[in-house]
Length: 464
Image 1 (cartoon, rainbow, N blue to C red):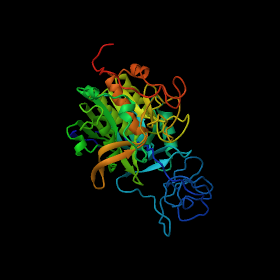
Image 2: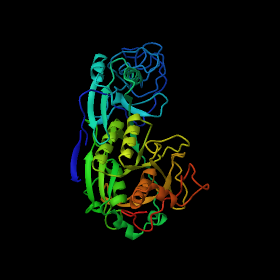
Image 3: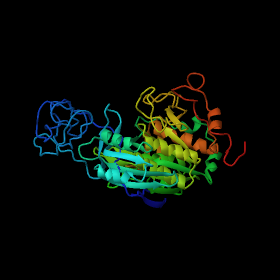
Image 4: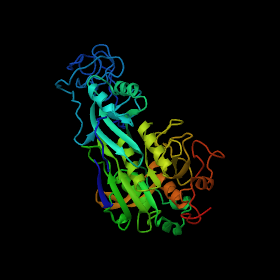
């Protein structure tokens, strides 16, 4: 599962577990017929079809299908469906994933997305394998994340059990273990109209700070990075991929843009002399949307900790996940600081993770006038603000070759805080103290402690 290249992984062990994905699925309509499914037909069964391709409920149960009659019959609440997929015709479509995509579904409530029919178990006893096989679970992958001190197994759920039922079954039998779905995460980005380059001036990034990156290691958990672009020619990079088996890599534009902000050459990057450890975790879902699993995130973070990377840029956000939380906690205990996007959902007081985990520096985006990005999430998990609206990034991959790319989103604000934190020698308290207060006096849920400001001199290796 891991591949490594220098311009520059994942290994698993031997008991099967299921994955969770986080992505956006279209809701289904209201089921009205009996249709073709063997479990009451077409995910209808007189119930309400409202999910993403699962036939559930045998008569009056609540179906989770799209009306295709082709689910596995996993009723998440009170249906009894156990039907297999049946042939469909007309406008019906079978529940097949695009080759190389991650199969996903939306949890009850409609927001969080997970890897379909999969759960993740961390640090269970040796009896887990025997119990799981006897209960009908299939071991998909097992991995020891040695730097984080974690042992992670992904299981496929047994026929006839929903992911929730399967999770509860394991959790009840092994209360000491961490059992969860395998949540899916998305890059936090959106596009906007062109504007001038203002970001470096806004954070007072002095030219001499570009040399602050010498002997500094930065981490990036994102899509892959296209190191072949001229704007990155001469940058120091180490790259590893942590895609789920069989998953096709998502386009590299997002990770490449973040890498360019951090270590771009030709006078553009904030810390062009730093060594960037880039961990690619994003594959595609059935609609081609970039998504990454919780297990891929944990493996990537383990790799970074193994290589003693202390400052980690995480330009993604998603739901709470116990494995992600534990991986973040272990990384922090080993000296790593994580800087994460607060997300672009436009919500208030709805935590986005990993930004909302304790100790993680959550970053929102502001424009040239210091106004917050309209779609940025708000809440007590916002720690700092940084430029992230109408940023022009040069030398990016376009249809006609390399060209300028205009971007907006909390993702693109994160590198300014990551670079500042590294320049403060990972002294987050000092960085917070130097921030320019915005909005209501003091820390607030819109701007956090304010607009990040670069140190006047490089603090790397300094004693204060």
